[in-house]
Image (cartoon, rainbow, N blue to C red):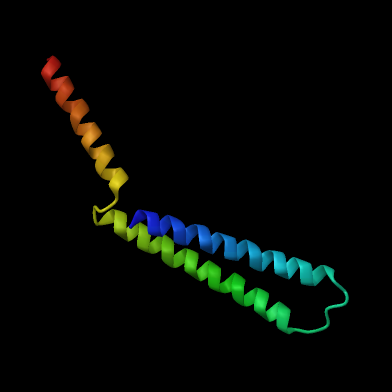
Length: 89
């Protein structure tokens, strides 16, 4: 699940960068008179920002439920360190 979250976040970031690049390209080209490329660029930017927010929320809720693999490893490591301290005493 975390791999899917990381993949989604990466694709959303790429979409955000592409939208900003398109917007900057359109703003710097005096030949473009149509409003449709600007609308498309703002649509991509807005949609990617909303997607990033939703992905971040689902990742945080996923980890808060205890399914985050990294938190389990860290919890096991801390408990192992505590057990080692108890054994040494």
